[in-house]
Structure formats: structure tokens, C-alpha cells
Amino acid sequence: MLRTLIFAKTLQRHLVSNSQIAKMSTIKVGDQLPDATVYEGTPKDAVKIRDLFAGKKGILFGVPGAFTPGCSKTHLPGYVGDYDKLTKAGAELIACVTVNDAFVAAAWGEANGADGKVKILADPHLELTKGLGLVLDAEGMLGTKRSKRYSAIVKDNVITHLNVEPDGSGLTCSLANVVLNQLKE
Image (tube, rainbow, N blue to C red; front, side):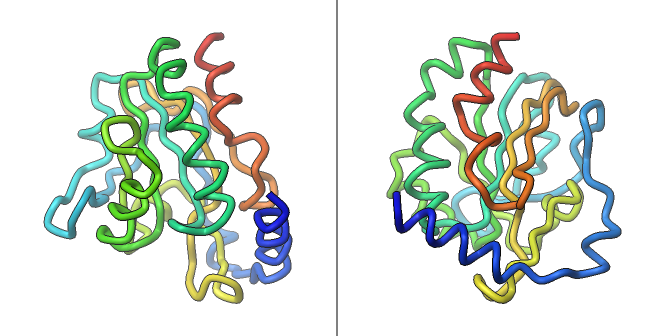
């Protein structure tokens, strides 16, 4: 836990301001998911995000990176651990987006026991992340742009609840327990 907090604080110090990113419009409640392609398993397994959520109520959450401390020790394990509660509360699909290649994303999901519970989706070109307006400029710490940490409840491709971490990388409002309470509303 201490290592996770140190990483989060270090990441915050290394975030770089970028006017192009600042101009992107962040998705909001009531908006439709962007028409974006992500990858599940391998680079050959392209999936349209709208196809995944068409006709379903689900959870979409984004993380700065696979195998990073906060993502691996807290964020993803929370959704995996609360899978039964989340599905009982109405989630038909739980998907996690990470700005990594498909092989890294798949290995991360396997290492965290996500198989059959949380779909791990790679967004290597930031197509979905840019479409959502949730790019985190973490070049100083992680070497490239990443996704802000967020969670959303999506019903038939429309955002009904959106939780974006205020600093882009913290572990507060985007956690599984918050989404569980929102599903129960």
C-alpha cells in the first residue's frame, strides 16, 4: 500500500501539461461512447467498444497502465473481487481499458485473475481514451500518454454515471465499491 501511494504521488509530480490534451472534450453523463476500436487478447482481436456495450448495462473503467502498482494492487483487483456483487446489482459486462499493447493487457488480466470476470481491453493507440477525452500525459513517469483513472456505468452505449479521478491517477472515486453503490441507485 505504501509503495502504491508513493507511486501515485510520484506520478502526480511528473504529469506534464499539454494544451492539446487540455482542449479535448471530456465525455459526460448522457453522452454516447465514442466509435473506437480496442483489442482483447491479441492485436488481431479488434473489438468495437460500442459493439461490446450495445444492448447491455455495464461498467467501463480505465487505468493508467497494466502492472503499475495502483492498477494491479487496488483498482483491477477491486472489480475482480466484487464481480459477484456488481453483476448481482445489474452489471452485465465489466471492462477495463489500459493504454498498453494487447499482449501486455492480456498477461495483466491473467495475472490478476480477471478471466471470465473483467474483460481487459488494450487501447494501444489511445483511440478510445482520446475519444473519451481522458488522456493523461504521463510521459515524465510512464514514458507516454496514458488513460486517466476513471469508471463509468454504461447503458446501451450511453454513459449514465462517470467518475474521473480529480488528479487523473488517484484511487478514490473510480473504485469498484463506488460503482457498486451507483448501480444500486
